[in-house]
Length: 548
Ligand code: 1PR
Image (cartoon, rainbow, N blue to C red; front, side, top):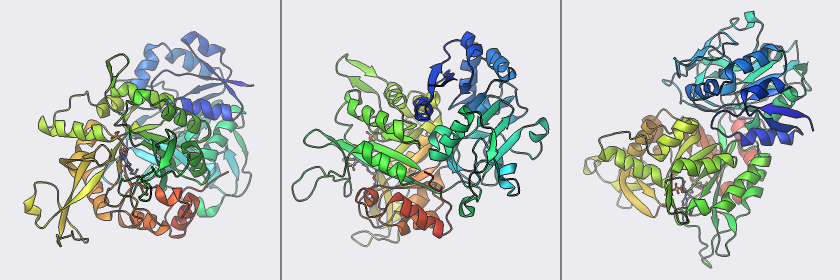
């Protein structure tokens, strides 16, 4: 098997990259010390998270000079995400920490006045030669009708001609009104801001072209013009609620307003096997797959080895981002009697192939403490510690709100909104109470309080469920989604209630939500992810084209 060297110098999900390389028939060897760098014949520098954290670790371990010397030697080099950012002179994320300076320029934070930050999702990477139909040549397999998975808050702004004058071939992407560098290539160097290992077939094609040294080649087929529009696509996420059934097997289940037991015989509803279902949704074009371990509050996740195995097996064949939720909190290990910090629990999941972890109940407790202590950030919560180590983009907060109706907004101190769907007594207002333990306990904290607190703590995304809507097939709670979107700048995923492609279209047309998630609609086979995305495309909403 041909070999490629990988330099793993900082925290992050490196497992997916290894899986992708192995899937392409290559073997990974690790650079274990600066002295190994010169021995590599092909080198990949990955990286995810915080520029300063990554580059400091990198420099302190003595890698800066050998890597610069390696690049100058002319041998093939690829940087991914922070591995691209490292090539520049610096980043406003950590002004005092220098980059390698191989490429001129400094990264800047995306503006969040018009859009969510981080930039999470599928966007273009178009080179000039890609865009110019007279020269149908592809740089490292990049295609104008493909989309690639990005997740970052800082980017190299694109200013036409600036990098090109130094000989760089630049692929750009647009987020809101900002153009930024999606990938650069020159001579032996390729670097991508996006994650090829998480970009489905399109990303694997880029990785393969690098491994096989195919920097430029004709486009294999003409671009599908329906999909060449630049910009971030609407993300469609498939969610799998997973738990053990009464026989002890892990199954995909689905509740009606969180009740997952069949009315007829009280058995846990069994809708399939987690790994197979995830694979099926990947093949249908799901932009992400989320697993929620819904009964983890009962057992310690340290005992949760089958769930880790589900993740490992899924990550080996499913090259889109994977999120895992359930039981991410400080946990007492009954065997050693030691409290295992949430960060360690999350690390178990990241090492098994998760790209993000989702925190539910623990986020509510942390938010309550935040308000009780006059909005003090302790640096010790699960959100803060995981966000610090793995980056905000790796921390999702899953919210399980439920409606509380009031006839007068003055009757509550909570954020109440006027509703078009009055309560049982005709109440015209409602607020959304946060719950924990899968909706079993309701807290005196509203959803707006929760999301603003967790954003301050460093959460990178909100997964917004709604107990009233869950499993009803009646559409998303647009009022709830609008109020949460108005409260935060981080991306929000709409969840609960999807029953048709129209519901997905409706939530994207009527709110500026960043992604929409469905569960039962896909598990029951009423719609495939592919069909939903085709409908969105027909209605002029930009989606990622599925590629074999
Ligand atoms: O509190 O950090 O241990 O996390 C537990 C996680 O498990 C939370 O994210 C919580 O949302 C989830 N959870 C707990 N109990 C249930 C349950 O259903 N009994 N599921 C549960 C939450 C909601 C969505 C669902 C959408 C879409 N499920 O994930 O997939 O509502 O459904 P639909 O499209 O069929 O309407 P912690």
